[in-house]
Length: 283
Image (cartoon, rainbow, N blue to C red):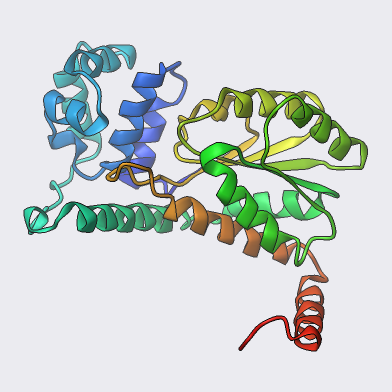
C-alpha cells in the first residue's frame, strides 16, 4: 500500500521494506508506524512498553535494520524525519474507555492520511468488481468484518460468496469459486492471525486468484500471501481489540467496487423497491 510520500509513516515503512522481520519485530514496526510523528523522541524502554515487547527486543530490531543499536536508529529517524513530538495534553485526564476512543480516532486519522493516495483502493475496487463470483474471507476476529462486507457487497455484486468458517472445506470452497470463474478474493485479516487464514491465502494464490487483503498492519503475517494489502490499524487499549478503521476501510472498498459495477445503482434501487413492497423496514 502506498502512503503519501512525505508522511512520517510512509518514510518508516520504506525503512522496513526488504527486511525479513520476526513477529516480535513486526509488532515493533507496527507500533512505530502508528506513532510515526513522535517515535524519534521515544527511548528504547518507552518503545518497548508501547509495543508490548522487551527492551532487548527493540535493540535487536534496530540491529536487524542495519543499525549499531537503537540510539543509531533514533538518530537516523531524527535526521530523515525531523518533527516535534506530539502533544499529549490532557491525556492523563481521560479514563481508560476515553483513551480507547481517542486511540481509535488516531487510527481513523491515519487511515484518512493514507487514503490521500486513492490508487490502491481504486485498483482493489476494479479487481473485486471484475471477479465473478467474489469470495470474501474472514475467520475468527475478522469474521464480522467479512460478513458485513459480504452483506453489503451482495446488494450490488451478482455473486458474493462468504468464507467465514474454517476447516477442511475451506480449500474446497476456494476451489469451487475458482471453477465458477472467480479471479480475485478479498480477505479481512485481524489479530490474532489464524494460521488457517495464511494457509488459505497461499492456496488461493496458487489456484490463480488475486488476493486483496485488509489487515491491521503492512507487516501482518498475511502480507507475504497478498497481491494487494491495504492496512488499517486496530485499537489495542481494551481487553479485546477494536476495529473501527478496518470496518471503515471495508466500506471504502465497497464504494470503489461500486464504481466498477455499471449496474450497481440500478441494483440498489431495485432492492429498495422490493423492500418497500414487502414492508421490510419500519421507517
